[in-house]
Length: 307
Image (cartoon, rainbow, N blue to C red; front, side):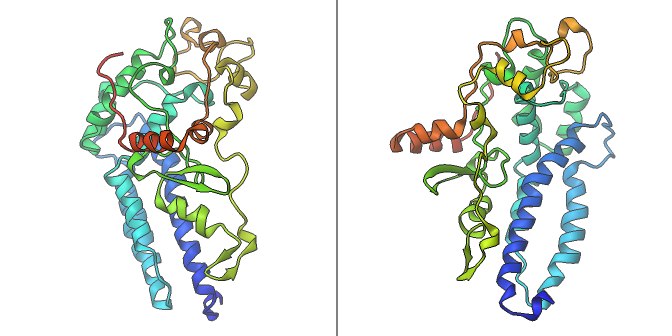
């Protein structure tokens, strides 16, 4: 019925782009991390998330459902699907997400345990080159998992650079060379990819290709949760989030799954650490500082060999 009116094709094609991309940017980030990092089944014949995605999304959903839509006159956004597949197969997308989740463990409500040698072997087998990109960082994570006078890993000198957050999908800009920075609606914003930039600046606007689309609205509000806690003490943030146990000091999140109380992190261990918003800092920079910062950001980082 929708295709009976040619004027609807532009909107349907727009919707295909942002729905496919959002499925990737948000769903692959979460489900990919859960499937690969939330399992202790390290059998070599168990499919990785990338193998599942290739079979069930790329070969099945994309080729069997999306591509045939072209016979109805729709333009299927093949480049969007290919960009998503590249990020999973070549750019370690959900592995960067898992690293970020573990980096920010004090402000999450779950527990992420350190990796074992068996984990390392499985990831390297399924994703060749994984250890060179992530192995040393996960070793640092294990070293810093129990409180011993040090800070949480996000605030230690591991070499990891806390990421900017995407204004559209709200997942951090983790494949850093893909990051887009733009001045939109009176402020500087960051986007994880050109397709997320397109959503905010083109798709989610009151007009699309000359046709009024007021229902799309705009991406407004506090898109980056770090903005809410800019300049706060980390201990106060955890209290405000409600991530403190009944004793009033032990944190709900922990960087391990041990239950020995002596190995639990408390608010005392995170007190005095200032939390900052990358977006607020970006907007406070001069134009020259901002350009230099983004150039360095897109070059990525190198994990230190030792802490």
